[in-house]
Image (cartoon, rainbow, N blue to C red):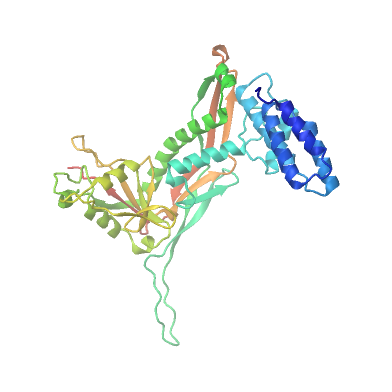
Length: 411
């Protein structure tokens, strides 16, 4: 039996339209048939859509609003054509429509519709952001203090430290005693632009791709952003942290010869927690920062009868916790030292109030550049991702630091 063509599905849809008692169920069935026909032939069913909309108005049924769908499809088609640099690249009029859609908030993006080739549809920007947050918890707004600014100009955030002040009883007719509150500001300079580094791809491959090239590029850019910006975030995080403890190792619990240069023991983490001011421990965003490799090493620590030393739980938000505090995974954190390797005193764990860690991102700064001329002689297209972001810790250096870190022993 020959497979149905788009004309067969259109014919069945036509028969539904000719019914004298066209119902909502018929309308739903009609829409399904039309979608199948359109999948088989993208040009099929355009006139049928207008017919069913007109019939729906006559019968008082809701008319499907196709304006947004059309614009989203226009965005998708335009972007794929733009990525490939194909002869069918949208003309300026279509780029203007693409730009207007983003300004109105339907499609979103950065540097919308620029003839120079800067723009990213909201789907791709969201995909990169989601990948970054899934890879590194220091991108998550529920973990750190995420600040989005409209421009990349310099600005400041106020800081305050009040870890020692306390209320007191004042006798009648006595003067209130002053208690100093340390205040200051975290100064952000002009926000830098991070570049992913160029990605080249043959034009033949772009033209023949069976999958969306935007999805492929999203993964590449997200990984590169996570590696580069992640390292800077850890550096800035440590700039607002103090040495909490030097590891003595797990030998006191597992009976091994592991020392503080290549392991972390139960007492080490307790000492690290003890080094942080209780005012910061009480913060809702207080937690541990470590790499996944460090987490695995902690899970491997056993006592002398082969029982796990550390007990991990899951909180109501689904986060893995240790001593009731959530564990935040950051791939850019150093690993626990390795036995037999040169001892460098790695810093594998940070503990503290991550709400004091500010990640500043310029809104709509995520963009992509495409060049079809740079490697034209090789018949390749070149792509480069851009993102403006910086970070810092809300902390006065004369005050108690909101974060402490554990360092491996150096001998």
